[in-house]
Length: 110
Image (cartoon, rainbow, N blue to C red; front, side, top):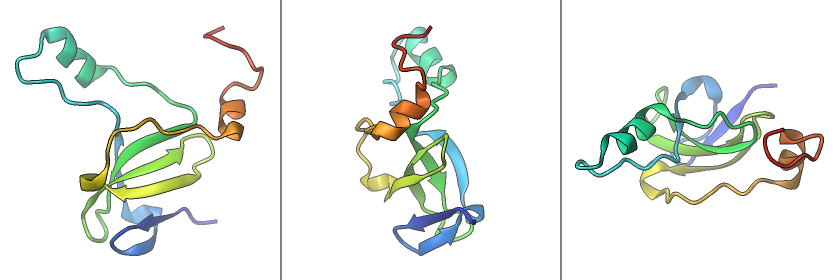
């Protein structure tokens, strides 16, 4: 089965036409922010297993930057929006994704 992404400009296209940049969540600090804020922005990323919003470029098509909300474990795509229209809101985890991410039903890191 091919992975397909529904580009808001070009329609349904194969995943191979897209280039992934990564997490769409981090917000760039102000230019005068302290070293810690810049260090966190550049180097610290969550390695999410489950729903996540990511920046993707349709490099083999319209070349627009998109935000793809998908499950990093199952690769199910929930939504695709133009990055210019994207507002940073947390991606809601579907119940089955929460269960897959934490199969033993444990809380915390243990």
